[in-house]
Image 1 (cartoon, one colour):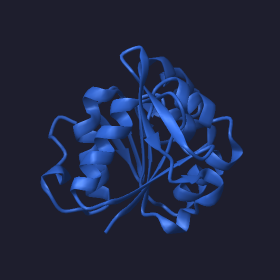
Image 2 (cartoon, rainbow, N blue to C red):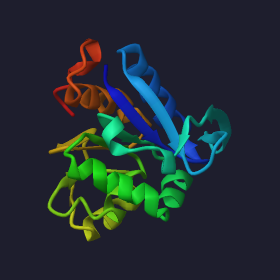
Image 3 (cartoon, rainbow, N blue to C red):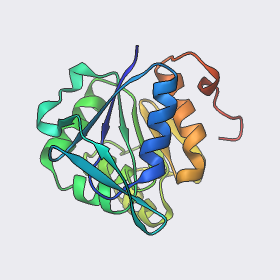
Image 4 (cartoon, one colour):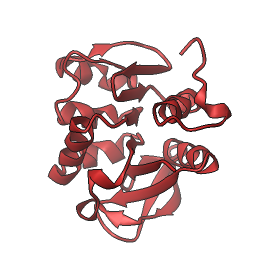
Length: 184
């Protein structure tokens, strides 16, 4: 069973956490949600606060060695707060150093830039962060999914099915979601 760590905080794009989480769980993955504090974190949906999600552990309580992959949902607020947290950035670096899949969607590739792991890598993200990704050395593409080594990046909620399928494929999970669409 694949073990996937999701790191998020208040202001995560609701669909970018909930939909991949559900698809991964349906395929048999064990999901842990880590955040900066205990309790619950609140999503962002359609310009307003959305649903809350229970936090399983704080980022200080998790270890890269306990997981097979890292998933980073976007939203503007969530990754902007997380990229200022040294523990979060250290975890991103540890997953990269272990060559484990890191899946970041929308604004979440900001965390990859902050961790200084995209230099020379092909990545994508929300249009407003592409200059930041380029300035961090990334080769920017406008595609549903950019897969380069262990890094999986996508642009927006419309990309969630291909984004999740690519992560599942990287984890060699069985099921219908493990086929990436040809046009990705």
